[in-house]
Image (tube, rainbow, N blue to C red):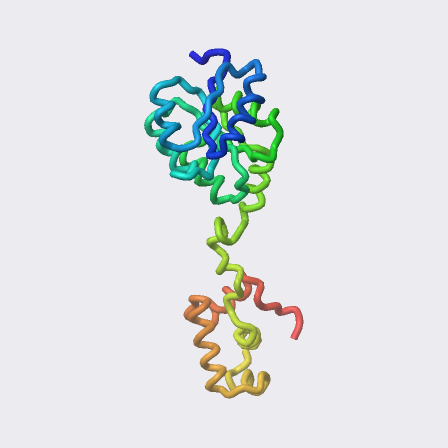
Length: 223
C-alpha cells in the first residue's frame, strides 16, 4: 500500500540543480524526503541502501545516459517510478526514455507545480507527459523519419510522359498516332507502353483502362 508522502531521488550531474530542486520539493506537503545523486554509480548505491518512490532523472549524465540509468533502475528496482526532467525536446529522446521505463517526461523549463504534479501522478501508477512533450509527439506523428513509411506512395507512379501515353491509349490511339501526337517515335511509344504495364501491374488494355479509371488518371468527358 502506498504511503501518503513521496520519497524522491534527484539524479542530475549538476549539484546546484539538485540543491535547487531539493529546496523547492522539500516545501511540498506531499513529499517527505528528497535526496540527490550526480552519477549512475552514486544513484545505484543510494537505491540499494534507501527506499525511494520516484526518481527525477536527467537525460544527460557523465558516466551513462539517463536512458541507460532508467533501464538499469527498472531492471533492479521495478517498483521505483522514473520521471525524466530534461532540456531535451527531441522526439527520439522522449521515445527512448519512455521505452526505457520512464512513467513521466517533463521539461526543465516548466514550473515547479508541473514537476510536483508529475511526481504525484506517477507515484500512483499513472503516466505523465508535459504539454510540451505532448506537442512534440503530436508534431512528429506524421514526420517522414518516424512514421511515413509510405512516403514513396506519394510519388506519382507514372511519369508525365507515361501519363500522356496512357490517356491516348484510353482513347484508342494506335502507337503510330500516339507518336505523331506527342512527336516521338513508335519505338519510344512502345517503350512507354511496356513501362506503363509493368508499373501498373496490368497485362491487358482492359486491365490497364480499369486501373486508370480506378486511379482517376483518365477522363472521358473531353477529348
